Image (tube, rainbow, N blue to C red; front, side, top):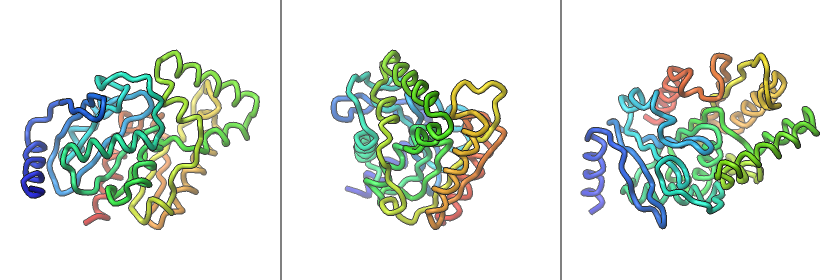
Amino acid sequence: MKFLASISLLLSFSCLAQVQTIKIGDFDIEYELSGSGKHLVLLEAGMTRDLSDWDTIIPDISKMVRVIRYSRAGNGNSSKTTQQFSAEQYANHTKSLLDSLKVNEPVIHISHSYGGMLARAFAGQYPKSVNALLLIDPSTEHDLDIVKKIDLQRAIKETKWMKNMGLKDGMANEYLDYWAKRPMPNFDKIGDKPLTIIASIKKFDNPVVLQITDLGREKMGEAHKDWASTFPQGKAVLTEKSNHFIQKEEPELVLKELAELIGKLK
């Protein structure tokens, strides 16, 4: 039965990519299968974002590997929700999605922004389901600590503003989970896997929040490099050419680092 399920999944990837819907618990989750190849990539969008965040890069990734992209509950055309999900609960949803799709192999988890925290949660809870991690300008539980050290009062005001923005947009679950700053899984739980962070340190002429001031970018970049160095196969790449959406502004860099990760898995 497992063999037949695997054949069915391969045939699904070989067909023309088309957004579909699958029931995960009480939620209808939109997803898309595409590509071909030996390895399987799972794409995780950022805060309040959906599978369309990968539109500019999905054609090229699909030439290299098989790909699953999806929209989490509350995002895109997946079921709306007022439930406050934590990163760990989102990780459980992701595992249920993979199980429902009969995915029995580990994935290369590519994530963006808040999705980086979800990818870490997933890798920590299901280490055997992850082959490698590629984190694109990831959020971390240390972001707030960094901006507080730069300017405590301004950091408090900006955090309050961002939380209120989340409530206004009806996405308090993701915003509040991000600002909760709970410790996320590190090397001890994720294990020795190829891991790459691509982070932006591009300077802004008129930065509106502390995170994108010159000092904020510098400190964030240092934190990413330090964290990546705790993994035996960790690597941090800092770019001055892109803003936050590196997969859209500098897709060739993402593809290059993905190819390098795939090379480590052969």
